[in-house]
Length: 347
Image (cartoon, rainbow, N blue to C red; front, side, top):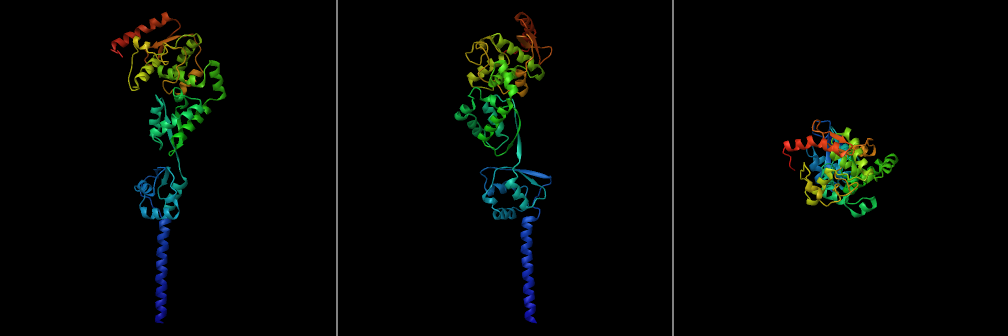
């Protein structure tokens, strides 16, 4: 009888130990292991992350990192970490978190507009995806890409159409660049290409002219009229004489794109640059800024009129006075020059 009691006791202890171990294993896999109050949280895992990096990212969100790491090792995640943005939901267990980190890479919204250069664009994009500004700029400027895509250092900004796009956070420089080329080609539908051809402009020239329109007026409802002025001048063989192109030429020559120039002086009109539309005919060799889609559409769908000139309207700031003749334009200029002088705008 004594031996039986010993055997039963041993068996019971064994069962309890096994049950405890089973419970521990079950808890490590299936018990909730999060410690935040919101319904969900997001973590960003770098493409070259180690398990220590993952643990550091999860530390504010996970109650017991040791059980998470143990299961990650067992499931092979620790040796197959993938970069990206991942969603961790409140109440997830270790198994669910690992599954999410394995296959739940979610996209991020990437937005940009009105960048002055590809360097500025690289800086803006690097704030929104994993790629840094240097790797993005290297991808933008890659000679072979520019050659095969039909762009050059002057025209390449035209390829990046301002909008909001979805990307995976771990997108690299070439991946972002190549996607933008696809978006550019998608934008240039047969209808838009036909309109550009009717104007006698290539798609890149349309965007370069749209950039001038963009700089001339911030009012979207006025852009088609401004575009019409420039297209009228091109048709008649008249120089565009657009002040924003002169300002860009000055900045490009000095290399200081942060310079603020509010007034173009007569001496500025003598700068020898293909961007100086007081000296060189036609559309500038590339965009002087990144135009909005509305500015591009304004060039493709210009207002039909006979205007050849325009000047800022000081009685309705933001808008312009338009003229068909130089005499009328000179009269329209008088209030504007008077206003500049009253404001002591010298440069």
